[in-house]
Length: 251
Image (cartoon, rainbow, N blue to C red; front, side, top):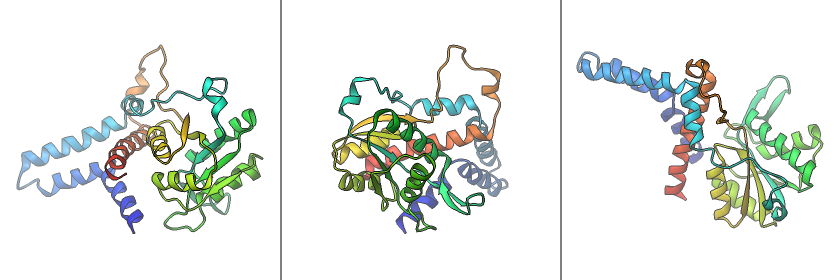
């Protein structure tokens, strides 16, 4: 029940749903408090527009993506004993596969984990439990992708966790090493790494899927044209900012 409520609250308070709640308030109070209602409407539409701008979404992401890409030749590599890949959702009822499979973001992590495994030979752990609607754990699907499609063996599979805090505690009970290479999205890295360090791991970050990729060219016209992809990045970034606050209060 707790997981369901958190999932529901997340869907309701993050954009674009939050913008529509504000817009509904504006509509409801349009006769009683017309000036306030107009202000609500402007705030709702303006913030939605801004969150759809690539330039704004990248700025939001840049505050989260503080870990550098992993360097296999760097000084940290000598201490690493295992690769840990966290799950992040699923592609439900995939018609081309005839079943649930890993999400695009999880596949991004698995691909990089497989790459590093081939380069360095470290064993891989996959971490992720079942969803609210499907009893098949994410880790089971992740193992299938690694072993059956990418031809990379999985040494440990943690299949009970439902959130990042449980990812960390259950992984600590399963994986008998101290220093891990953590593979997750760049925006997620700080919170995930903090959770795993809190249970005793030494964590070397291996972020993937950077939204913020600085160049010498500066912003272009396209960076100020709204699109749905930018809104998705903004949504994920705002979720992560809220997640950091929640985890510091809760854990």
